[in-house]
Image (cartoon, rainbow, N blue to C red):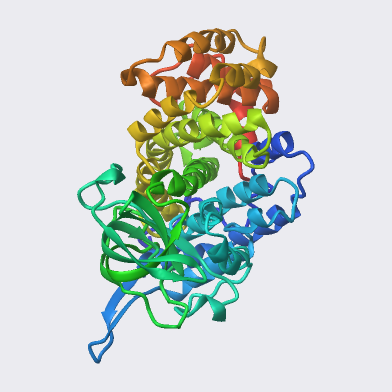
Length: 546
């Protein structure tokens, strides 16, 4: 031997491919939910974010994490976060693709579905920097309650220009926004907030307050403005708080430190204090929770979309690896057990995509009573179930790669980043119990039984297990008086709607296997336990990104 080894039987990275064109489940979900949708922007985005160049930017933005600078060299507070240049490349691409506030401009058919598909695709490239993108999308419904602020900021929230400079909104072509809700002592129980808001006069933006207190999780602190909760005389209220005041001076927002998180590395999450910071009332004083939850509803949609995108990326990497890696005399993808695992993951990924895009469709029809009810019910359901499945999904997909999947470098190193990212969407914007409780509240907002019955009706007769579940749900909903079974109800509503959607969009092999396993009990307690009669080849081929 002249060399110690040669490299062979190592898969080529999954790069320089069109993420949209190769995603058949997503394309079919779009045809079903928005048949008139013009998909050319998604085709273009799929090429851009599937490139090796953009994958490099995603890697660099996660390796060179944000750095906090509280003071300049002369001792003056500056409270700035410095990002690697690749972070700004990614932000420019996301804003340029209209993944932030553009649906509210109403310039395209099915704008929320179009944006949802783009958001899912971009998540496959890099999810963590999408935090300020998601919040900028979600802010509009709440911000409209202060007409004067919205008149100045609304057009710039839909701009396709990204400007990272910390300066007055008047001098920027586009802006981003975030939010601050939770505090040390409360977490999800925001009624325990202690941050105080004291009246400080009024001006062109309405009632002005001085905010003093803190926020325990304050993501993307370099956004241009935030919606925050604080205690006013009439109770917990919602306020618009800009980083730079109208006169060009910096607001009294002191960044204490950045969070050292498990994942989500490219995004700066911070702890902040407000020292008499100027803010303007949004909505009614004392009505802060319902006001800011208008924003929370949209970010919960993005949690479901984001996890679905991460599932798709993990599955694509696993199939790419298994197609090229040989073991025990043949490619991994031809090994029966690996086929079972990949097919099972493919079912989960497609069902998540179908449910997330269906939820996005509901926001395109706010005046339709059925769509309004489905948005109210499916938001907590999709956020709960899709995100709850994410971590298990990522672990199984990582195992398909063996030790290579556990390594951070190279093309397959994306899998480790996906795995670390998965738990976040399940926690952010309300963990599982919060979503289950929100579903119970949603059931009291209208005729939930009638809405769900109508939603499931087109799939009746497609599979006996789906019919049994659909028959049982109305009585369970009407009898739901205890919180203790709320998580199970959320799970079963999610599975029923997923199965119904697949029955209308997916091939028989997918529908049959999903219903037999998830609804019919022909399944184990881990991925890769589908029944022997499953058409594994058809399911995996449909999911393949190659």
